[in-house]
Image (cartoon, rainbow, N blue to C red; front, side):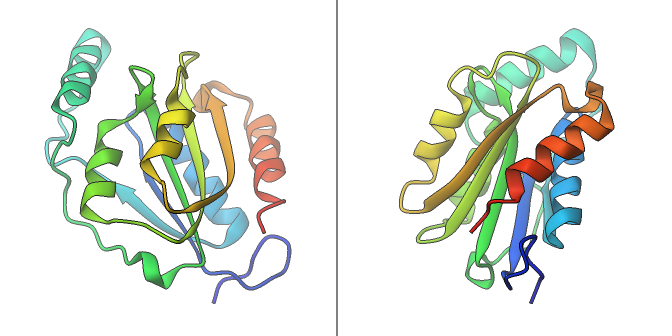
Amino acid sequence: MKKHYKGAIMKTAVVFYSLDGNCDLVAKEIKSLLNADLIQLHTKNEKNRRGIIKFFWAIGMVLKKKPPLKPYTFDPSAYDLIIIGAPVWASSPASPLRTFLSETPITGKKTAIFVCHAGGMGYGLEKFRAMLTGNTIIAEADFLNAVKTNKDELKQQIENWVKDFK
């Protein structure tokens, strides 16, 4: 069993997708604070994308709805708390997350969600909540430009968010 941040025993997983490293940075800090298992999702096609090419690729992924993922191992029944994170694309959680949730249904679980964005969160958290109906969402957060944020400030923001997980 994993030690919970507040001292209670709770087995926790952090499942996330990251394109620019923002969600990766946040997820790894959460893992460290909660001693959680980390499951990173990767699309099968992971070409290096920069600038305008990245923009058009992301729009294509939003339109595609469920891009194929590289194989991963995750059993939701093994966890007391599942924390899920994704970047926001076109006001929605990134499409690889839709693939994950369609391949690995999560119901009846205690969950927390986070999104990373560059200022255009839109309906990201609202749409995220809708994707997790049948679960108890205990907390949600959005992180603005995590990789550009002062590391101490980001760490404090994450610590403040996870300290009340029950």
